[in-house]
Length: 215
Image 1 (tube, helix red, strand yellow):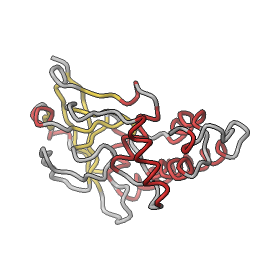
Image 2 (cartoon, helix red, strand yellow):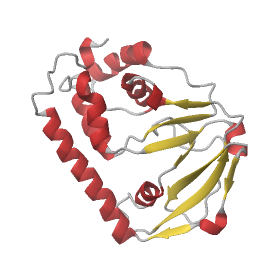
Image 3 (cartoon, one colour):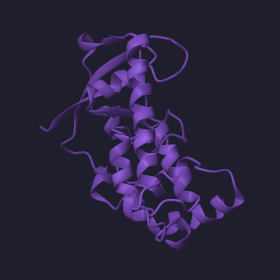
């Protein structure tokens, strides 16, 4: 049986993963989000500015009979199209008209999958997204920008079957001090934005193959 160890960073000590719950406006829509990276889970558990300590819950996911879609194996435009289905990078009429066309051209139907795997669109992502939809970023530097963001890879459980294959290892519950790991989170984000701005302002950004020209 194939298994993977995953972590869920939360502000809550008691968490019950439940099929059908979650926020439609998260990266991959409604579902339960986890990561293989323990350090990132600690940061994500205290990323809110409320000064509350967080918790990292450890899980074991049985993957043998699950259909897992991995956006890392697709063109980065497919990942951006998936995010556009759930999250707005702009509230302008131009964006809403063009994003529908972008999704129609580059989007992938992942509705039949039990688990979606891909980058996490944290705060630094929105710097990329907003500049991209304003036609300020060439598609040729998109993947490098994402690597600079160190977004981290997350799993999103989507189906009842996936939830039934998830088991918490409660003895490994980890308490996360806010004052330490919120600073780590903010430093990662500020460093990512600085490096991204340097690349966007560099000669490598030809601003030729941009959002509106890709449709």
